[in-house]
Length: 329
Image 1 (cartoon, rainbow, N blue to C red):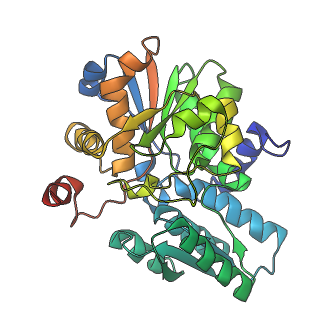
Image 2 (cartoon, rainbow, N blue to C red; image 1 turned 60 degrees about the vertical axis):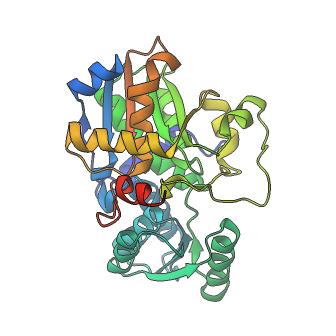
Image 3 (tube, rainbow, N blue to C red; image 1 turned 90 degrees about the horizontal axis):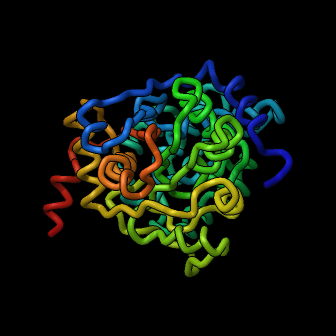
């Protein structure tokens, strides 16, 4: 891991962003604890600014860009939606121009929010290569700084502030379950958690088809190229490959055993939170909830106190997955 990224950077990020993000609550549910056979502590990032944890990393990275370059022409990013909203929000707070590249088919609720924060919304093809190419073209044309959604140490440090808050409230956690896409949140949480509570295990929760476990076990990037998106109901965690900066951190700090969750299981987890906790969450946190409630006891019988990251709540209520998913068959 680079010398310039560790828990110190996470603590500095917390100080930098604290006036612009929420300290989100940690919820418990007796009925879910009974189902899980463990004590679950739900970190409600679905109640975060912009509706997802991404506000933390985006604010840290964008505010640092403004500090380092007061005359910055602005920022640009590519996103499946939540990071785009977060960068648009952070740029508005910092008084910077902003462009956000999203794939066609990105949920309307996320696209509308990006525009409402004052950012330019640019559509691209639904491939990682197209996202990066369009973003690079805007960077070259405008001189705006790229705020990568996960492969950026400043973004990771901001996401790691989730662990600072969670472990302050529940310092004796045995494990934390984190939905994973590119690995920025998982990396930041793992670095902070291992510094504050070395015995706490950090488990990634992935959609079916990501194939992260074999890569972590071998410490090699075994994914096929070119990079692709997974066909998953969870649009927030569709990126198959983790980042080139996040991968070494994941290999060092997270458990190589990965929860792999199907679309049907994500939807079940999502509905559990809707019904039992009265909270609106996306399919990605639904994956973590399903893992915690249905699989954790068998996965790690020693874990008695388990943190679960409810990473986002930007749900298109006109396209609830348990309705649209059934219609697709």
